[in-house]
Image (cartoon, rainbow, N blue to C red; front, side, top):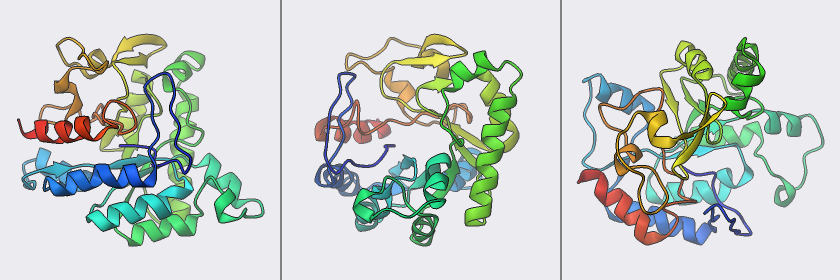
Length: 267
């Protein structure tokens, strides 16, 4: 998964490196070269329930946030590669933009809802990602009643259904934050909950945690600073509400690690 591209690439001290459109294209061209075929959460559900098969080298691609580059640079790449991703939408930004004068396209941070509709027509799938993108670990401490997370989920679903005519069936947790309170509510509404892997560290129920411990995966963290390799892939034993996803802007942003990540999936 990733948050798309930056038109002006940047890097940070925690291992993040944003990708230009050219670099992004190079990574997904590797996936195409290796024979990857994208599946979505519909296909994953059928496979886990024994009602469907997967291609020889299945690849799930997620993007978070309805940013403007998703419609153009990112969509250009995935269409050229023949891939069908899932976009998880947090609604606060795109809704705020819709209430004012629309900036010029080069000045916009978010898509319009019509542009999201273009992605649907192009084969993209849509998932839920809260309204305001809160830190779910902190939120569970601030509001032990769970009312705020309920509001975040329900308002997000309502807006997506009103704007796009579909109700999300899958959810992406926000940031490297997780709470059992949020998971409890996610289970009531969605068939899958997806995590975000950038390092070996996470936050859970108001406390620091290892990514591997959140996922229930044994083993030491890897030398690259990430969790055990076993925690980086979806398997039949994966917890459907704690599915892993590797961010292409962190541990696998270079072409060598990205290629190895895909090749080792079948090892």
